[in-house]
Image (tube, rainbow, N blue to C red; front, top):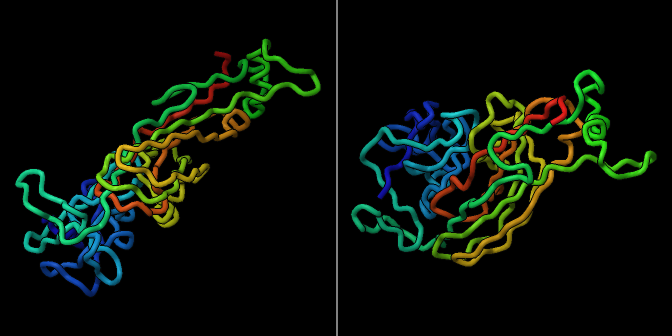
Length: 280
């Protein structure tokens, strides 16, 4: 069985974990899912059937929401105590090394994986060229686009708009049970220099610990059977009509934490868009 995560232990990013002031493990407060932090909110999964003050108790190795550039992008809880263990609560959960049961419950065990996150311009770091140097103000990206693309069709009275950047994703349930319905969210990170390398971010975590993150698009995902997939697209239409600079986007499949899954990492590398004031 996994160790219980505890107050005072450093998360894998170095931030110190908080814990309960009433329930203790080894003399230190027990960590709770979606209440306690290690730089940001502990997402979990935690134990599905052991609770501390009406919240799931957090276990060693739980995911903590992204709260900055690496090492704060992909973060896990730790334990500095070595005596208190708790079952995961998932159905038929066993230790992969020993084969020993580590479950004390029968919670469903779907597992969502973000197999694809890309755009119509590619993934990783992308440069989008918009205007001719010194000809159009870089804040007027629509005129800049037409200067750089004289072949674009349209009438002088109503020229065609610049193309949107479209983000595509695909989610697969690799778990043993059907997943609950969930909401996928497209995040934009305003502080591009300190943006995470992955967007492991829930609405609760963003509201409380990540003011530089904006939820700019959502889509509902139906229940997926084991092996089932769901794909979709999201559009952030403002890139060409704002100033030059960098834009960082990430996607997280379960922003309201409705799916009971053993691995909450569920993310892919963020996409960085560089809008240039040059013609490509």
